[in-house]
Picture (cartoon, rainbow, N blue to C red):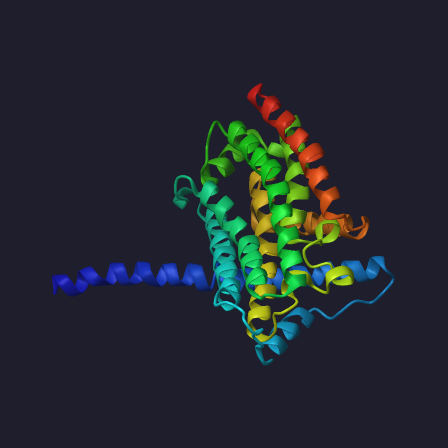
Amino acid sequence: MQMVQGRYPAAEEKMKQIFYCLIFPGFLFSAVIGLLAGWVDRKLTARLQWRIGPPWHQNFTDIIKLLGKETIVPEGAKYTFLFSPYIGLISAVLAATYLGRGIIAPLESFSGDLIVLFYLLAIPALALMIGASASRNPLASLGASREMKLVLAYELPFILAIITVIIRSNGAIQLGQIIRQQLFFGSNIFSLSGFLSFLVALFCVQAKLGIGLFDIAEADQEIMSGTLIEYSGLPLAVFKLTKAVMFYALPLLIIVLFLGCSLSPLFLIAKYLMLLAIIVLIKNTNPRLRIDQALKFFWRIPTLLGVIAVILALFGL
């Protein structure tokens, strides 16, 4: 009897973990919010261009349509062509789950989860590069090359922005501690170093999402979707879902790091929509950069601002 009773807590804990990963705040929740955020992006873009825009369910319809399409594998493509989309989706969902749990239960976040998040959010771009390279298409390879250079450009200033937050949080690399620090001492954005690192992180998020100025790896008008040119059916739907989850997770990460003074549901939704509107406005008011221009931009302005922010944070500013 004691053995049977001893199994129930473990079973309940496992059910909780499955619920967190698959339902809330895991895959289902992050995918739905990400697809709705994509609709907000398309709707605001349409209104800025004096168009009506799609209905709210358009992104869901597109995913369902792709799930019913045939998956065409290019001749000579490697196994990684089909595996890479799922690797990117799993990493994005794990990052979204950790972020959601960090907000809901800050005390339950594990030590060093910010570093884990940084690596998880880098994997979707690597998966995109691997899948495009495995397709043996010259345009996809060109897109993968651009994506690789773009990653090398924005990761350094993004790291500097995170280091600034860590310094301002007294060396904390745990989401729960960073949130609690801002609850007691105010949001990081209201300091000079925090504001500069917020600007740096905002441009890096644009590049990570591959939108606006940094839609370089896909570039429909130049290389016909580039990295995604050979994808169809289910794998393409998985890549679209990955981008939707990232559209949810990356703005949420900025909110946690720089706007974490109040994370009640109402304020969290308001901050998310405000940040989403800023991202969409930047996207629609600036032309796409060439890859060499993007490299120069990130290695000069955001990197310099990131270094200044770190120095200011060391002096408590």
